[in-house]
Length: 291
Image 1 (cartoon, rainbow, N blue to C red):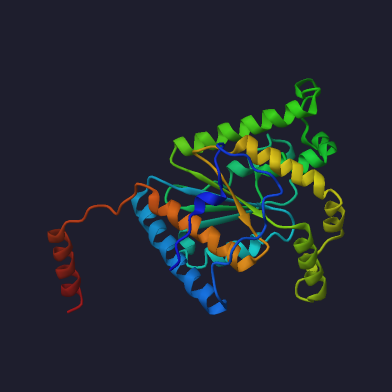
Image 2 (cartoon, rainbow, N blue to C red):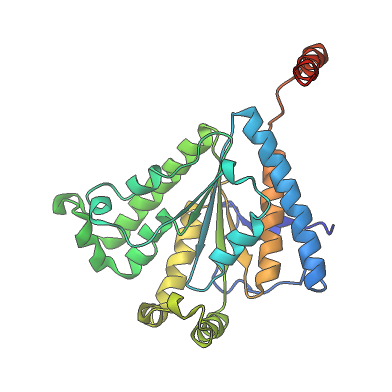
């Protein structure tokens, strides 16, 4: 299997992210068969490391997928985690907040879906929408019932407050044994356009397209600025961002799989110690039952 230095995609506060960062990088695979072989091998590494984490019962992992529409979140999750034991995996997709969600703090609905120790939890769209989409459409703040006297008069101060809240939230998770891997699937506007057109040309995918997708494309520059500011404000050494060049989906999947395999294998987890004598005694009991 090819090795990959994933630090080139890592942002932990020591370098700045800019949205002109390339959305394409050198291909890690030669053809479809090679891509499948590599991804299968990485999936096996992820599964083995997660199996050890589950047996150890001290750590859990939260993986965040954040991207513009058609960035490859669904396909990335489906392919990267294809080898994971579903009984130790939790996937949560977040859409428009409900009326109940709006009556709580902005992190409340995400708290409800956090993984337990030994599990990998995946968020498809995340609490970062609260400083991305909400920033592009600040009029939506009125739907959150926040007391007027608690809202900063300077809108930028509000986003700084939320950046701080998110960083503290993720630090809290890290200190409790739940590191957070934050993946921004970085795709070019032209590539996004091609994918949206492909959806419209595919009867099985037309349902995924919404007029709102076109409306949101009009705010592309605003979203890019919001992503740049958000990543730079919330990237930490404990819970870094990884900006994944995503114009090529198979390449994107391999990069993500490398990141997750390396991280899971780096956790100080181990299988519980076993005693050979006890195991042999249990084997004899089973053999006796089968006679």
